[in-house]
Amino acid sequence: MDNLAKFRTDTHESRTIGAILVASGRLTDAQVKTIVKFQQDKGLRFGDAALRLKLMNQGDIDFALSRQFDYPYLTAESSAVDSRVIAAYNPFAPGVEALRTLRNQLTLKWLDHENGGKTLAVVSPDKGDGRSWLVANLAVLFSQLGERTLVIDAALRGPQQHQLFGLSNERGLSSLLAGHSSDIIQKVPDLLGLSVITAGVVPPNPQELLARPNFSTLLANVSSHFDVVLIDTSCGETADAELIAARAKGVVMAVRRNVSKVKSVGNYAKRLESVGATLLGAVLIDY
Image 1 (cartoon, rainbow, N blue to C red):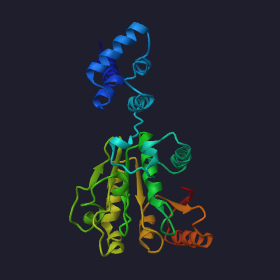
Image 2: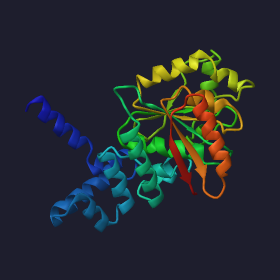
Image 3: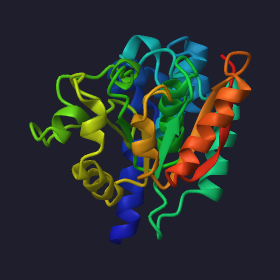
């Protein structure tokens, strides 16, 4: 058997539905043997045999298939990721399909691996516009596309990404910018290809930290290791987001249906353009 054939065989055998469910604690080895025997006796597929024996449910099958095709999603009992990150828990929901359309538009019109179009800042004119929610869900969707994805929580005045992804916030962006730490990238368990730089301790001088050259250096460094970099920002009540937007390759504005004011959105768009930011468009959020 040549190396390629061996690779294909090994990969197939290590990613069977039974092996995946045993590794995740959903089946035991003894149960897999019972299912395989019943499968062979009845001429059924593994999943159908398990359903007939009532050793699995459809949710277990969907879970295993998502792992087989590198399209992971989570279950509430197995993850610390917040339920608001709906793309991680229910990637087939109608609302997620709209977010997937946005991801695809950004992939076609903005993402440019060869010319460095990887960093995207998500901004909003006011508090409560759904900016952090949008960042987290887009990040999951990009990672499900197979892109090595990084979230940077630069909302140093009121960070949320550590809460949304269930991560420690002891060290993060603020400690890096202040020169206190360098090892700050955290992987999100069970979400392949997704990492996060949390905001870290809320500093007394967020605007001054973001204005430092090492923030630009950070963006350049992570762009060489990740395919997509999504940056959460503070709302437009301060100039924090403008500092970030001017350094990112693209900017998307989150606006809330029946909440965001047209005048506020227009004024904020002008402020972004005045600092040279590339505003790709606005996303109307209704949740």
